[in-house]
Each structure stands twice: as C-alpha cells, then as structure tokens.
Image (tube, rainbow, N blue to C red; front, side):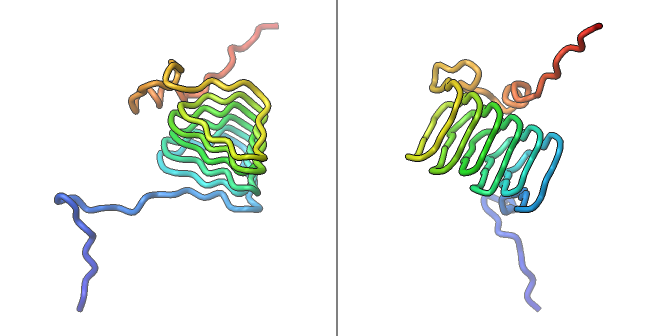
Length: 147
C-alpha cells in the first residue's frame, strides 16, 4: 500500500553514507583499500588506504601505514600515518611512526613516537585534488635488489 520513496534533494536520491567495519576478533593480513569510511576494531597486519575517514577504536591494532582523508585514532598504530585533513589522537592511543597531516588534535594521554609534519606548508597534503590524493597514497614497492 505504501511505498518507501528515496529522499530527493535537488532532484537526486540521497544515499546513506557507506561504512566498512572490521570487528573485534577479526584479524586481516594484507592491504585494505576503501573509497568510503572505515572503522577498525580488530587487528590488521598491512596498510589501510581510505578515501574517507578511518576510525581506529581502542581495541584495534594496526601494523602498517594508515593513509586517509581524515582519521580518529584511539587504539594502536605501528606505521606512518598520512592524513590529508584532520587527524585526532584520542586518550590512550599509541602511534609508533611518523605523522603527516594538515590538522592535528592530541588529547591528554595520547602517545606518538616519531616525527610530525603538518599545516598548510606541508606540500604533500596541501590542496590535493581527488586524483592527486589517490596518486600520492599509492604504496610504492621497494625496488628488487640483485644478489
């Protein structure tokens, strides 16, 4: 009798935001690439590359690089963190690697062991378009060494 119609704004159907979740008790080995937001509560051994926001919960353990538009970290990250927008380190978070971000918020009790490059002057992050961000976040493989 009643059909649900999608909400239209300016003649376009509005879709709910997409969110990928890695739950507690989940262990992933490998690189994760996502075009939408990512919430990590489990363990990942590998890099996380996200076009949206990455949320690392207090139960999460990431051993690899984290590259995203925005990030909110409450758990453990062992690797370089590269965020084009805002990076928030929550109380109890531990980051063992360098930080590259435009804006940094650090709560009392958060830790990071590494160097930090940030602000408008950071050429790696300043004013990147989507295509530039995608190109700059591509993980480069080390050259093979001959014996």
